Image 1 (tube, rainbow, N blue to C red):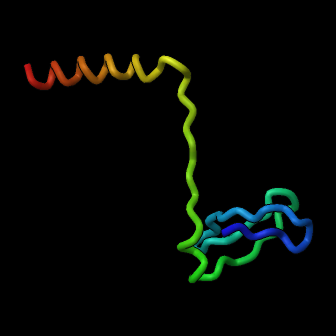
Image 2: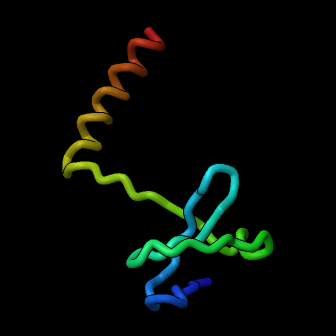
Length: 71
């Protein structure tokens, strides 16, 4: 579900404010509390960028660690 700001029309995204979840506008910063029944319909994810080839370096470390563990 996507909500939009009443003030500027920007998309609202979920965020944590102390102990409650709020919706905050990407453009003007307006916040509104997120109702409990709506909270389950929002999912926040964070994508972590890894430089190309980095996973292969980690694979070698993993293989070496595994060999040391079982030797």
